[in-house]
Length: 216
Image (cartoon, rainbow, N blue to C red; front, side):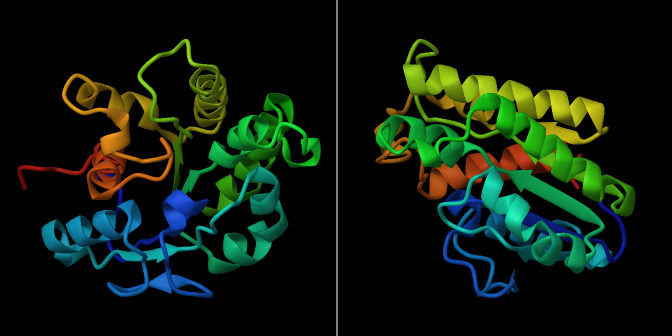
């Protein structure tokens, strides 16, 4: 596995990462929220207890990539992570569809990719590694307008990940195998905020990305 002894792993993102985590920094079984970050921590602690990995959650509901930029110093650089996981972009796209008249809330693809690249470049020299997770929309049809737009943002994440030697986690692809059996509304009523099953899909995709040994 990529994470090592006494590594500090910080997660930053929007509501999917936040999930009711403690403030100012979520930590511990009661502070990490009730989402995929909590699941990742539980599996790391139960399967790799000897590594003593410390997990922190600084996700904030409603955030887009601009918000991450505004708090990057305090919530990322100052925390001095060994590993950093970033999942952002859902709100950057969603506001274009649920608030079409409020253009000040829209973060279009060029700004999104440039800002993400700027943030990753600023932290890359001080961390052992990065995990970049794509935004997603829980809709099987690639012809759906919001899904197709989200895929473009996911492709931007992949470009930045390749440029900065980051672990790339395609969350949209991680959900694909379950659509033959489960309707998206059974995972997330609004196609964005997943239930416990959806969060486990995210946790599994993350752990696969960092080389978690499920047979250990």
